[in-house]
Length: 427
Image 1 (spheres, rainbow, N blue to C red):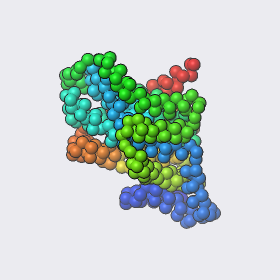
Image 2: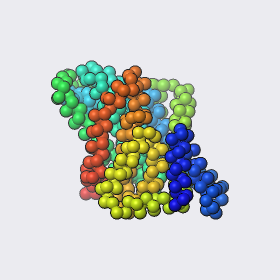
Image 3: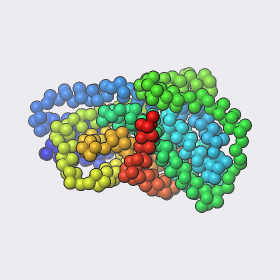
Image 4: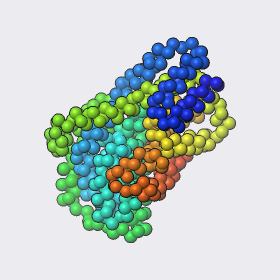
């Protein structure tokens, strides 16, 4: 118990003082082994950290990060926007639906919400302004729809969760697709409601020639999610192999088909991807040693005992509030590395579907990117749209409320989140 208190207090203290998260994880864990006479050699710290990232499945993570950066630099995202505009812009709320649908498709290629916002945010804003949408509504729907990308396979956060818990990546991806589609529909319905309430005019009519032209122009882009998801669920490739194939495919398409950038720029893109991947991997390594020491200190067992007399509904509410509060102050990857090893044994005892729990956590972290004071999409929006911090926060609040309501629906009515896996079981 003493070791557990030391770990938690020391970790929280370091985070409060502004230390990097990986130090706030590794330092308390190492000192706990040193001070509390566990009889474990300190060399095991390095061995455990290396074993935490020595995973074939985890190799998919840097590959998908690289893929997202390639697409963000190129024009595949623009092709998606053009196609979705041709499909739905003639409907009531059509431009808002375009933003949601394009973000969903972009997520099926890149798996990164921030990449989606940076790559498509400017294009979306122009379209929404042309459609007579208020700027604050536009900032909000762009940011939250970009978060939708992290819920769609191959979301990087989903791979991280699967690695931490040992859950099947394919199972997590399937539930992610199920949740992402439903959340996308909810955001689209809110966009339609806003358009009706504010008498946003419908722009243009559906034109088959325009749609066919956009489809032909984007055919190389559409093939990317087919390669990823079709390859995985068709049993042809593993998620890691799908990541490698999709990355090579995107490079070929952007460099040789669309010619959006030159071969010499690949080094710069790869360097940026390597920095992002290194940040995530060092967090995983640090989280591995912290979760191991926490297990020695019986912290997960203690938490489970504390929650023993609570109902499943109350436990899920506590977990949701915990992640929402954490998301206000630290990034989602750090929150997952710290909390998932503690909470996963609890939901196992509850008999909850581990893939569904993973998506609830991923959605929590996605909401966290849009919540003040430190949500990353707030600062990305301030920079991208050249607006004040207060304006960005105000524009996001209605969408954060919609997101939290959606999260509660997925939490307490799991059939809504699991409609796709349940449907596939019938075949």
